[in-house]
Image (cartoon, rainbow, N blue to C red; front, top):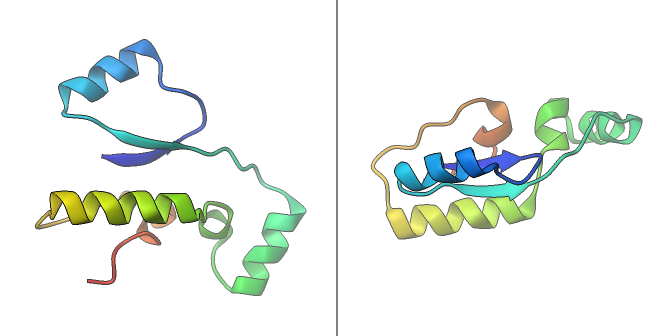
Length: 87
């Protein structure tokens, strides 16, 4: 599992992550702002997608996919769909 977090994982979340075989997280907390809205209009993508663009997440997912080589990838929402590998 790969996901964004706003805060560090709690102890309970760390235990849960270990039980499922590990979870890769990237901390990011970008709120709504006029600047994000302007960038969204300029790039012609939804605000949530533009606001959550992050080159470090792209690298993390590319690395995880290359190492794990999954047969399928589950994506929960548009925010993460932007990181799907082209293949």
